Image (tube, rainbow, N blue to C red):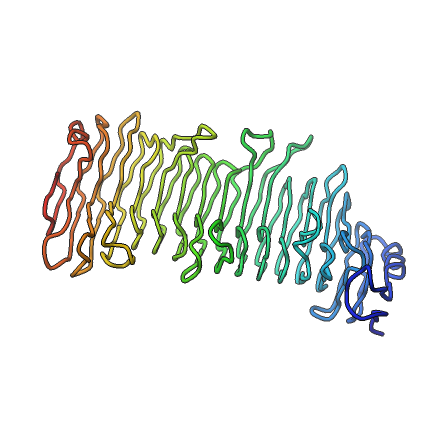
Amino acid sequence: MKARALCIGFLAAACAFADDTSALQGRINRCPSNGTIRLEPRDYFVRPLWLKSDCTYMGVPGKTILRLAAPNQFIVEVSEKKNIHISGIAFDGNSMGGAIVARGNGPSSGISIDTCSFTGVPANVPFPFNLAVFSSWALIDSTFRDNTFHDVAGGIWMTTIENVAIENNSFAHVTQGNAIYIAPNPVPFPSGRNLRVAGNKGSGLARMGIEIFRPDPTNGSSLYAPVIENNEFSDWTSPKDGFGLSITHGDGAIVRNNLIRNPGKATQYLGIEVIVDNALVEGNTIDGGFAYGIAVQGTAGSRILNNKISNMAETGIILACDGGRHRCASRDSFISGNTIVNARRVGISLDNDWSNSKIVHNTILRTGGFWPDDSAVYFAGIHQSPAAGPGVIDFNTIVQNAPAPPAGFKFCGFRINSPMPGSSIADNVVRSESRMPLGVGILDNTGSATAKWLIERDRFVNLTSGRT
């Protein structure tokens, strides 16, 4: 028999529900060790349910629906529990609160959630009840796979992890926070290993697709080489502040083969942000609708390899400073094999201490006239700022490929702002495909900035000047 609302509408203050809480809680309490509770294909109206450890909870996908019947609550609690499997259940926050919570004073472990759906989690309720899935302490040996999130204020929000996989989930219309947010806290047991966030998809995002966050200064939490790969996010709803991926915790992070797309939408801030040492950012595609494609905010040893970045409103790849947090060094970075198409102002910007870094074998293409204001834009393929030690800018190809760029559009291959003894600009190609010569191969921004650079074997084709 289908559960029945005893009045019209879902506002708790005005509506009493046929409450299924007691009956369901009784079934849960009677679940034998390693047993299974099978929920019928019907609507259940419930206040918070406390799930029992060592039990499987099975529904009929799309037909077994748990609807929240009390404001500012979660539908089920798995706090400090272990070995719980939830599958095939639709969770509806009913515009009152969230779905699943793990909290308390100890970790939850062996939590497996798959083939479930989440909806009706509102933005106008207090934190954390505006989140579909919320873990405030720690999750160990747990998985979230093949779930769908639709019309939720926030998706998956968790703190400390150990052996956690978030895979192949789908997010649509995340209206307030992130699709996936992880912010580890310090705990008195081993943590931070084997986080994998892979194969997730999302569209209609208010803030970020994936954020892995560490306070600055650090709070002493641990996260080691998280893997973030094969995720796809698109179509932001924020006026300007959205991110695709923000990885600020987990040195040695692997950020690989993700697709970030926002063409035709309001320009967001960053496609991929990296604030960890020794990150691998490889094979990602960032397609339109961001100011910056990939930004490394003053951390060392990044490898930015074989990414495809198109139509950024400012810069394709930037080694940046975060002066407020005293992060302004990306030494020993390696930027290679990237293709950057129609970044508006700069292809690759070296805007911090990039000493001992190599920028090699990148392809940067710019079509004069692509951006509406190009008659007033000065584009630089690679822009250099001062660094304490030498760097290498070799074997890059920078091309302006419009036959008739607008009058006033300016183009240069390399914009050099300071001497860096021992540095090189060698074996590069800078070419304009305009009908008349256009642009400069190397622009010395001070008149003496290139004095101590090794500049050799570069090819400058159809430009007004090789060096100026």
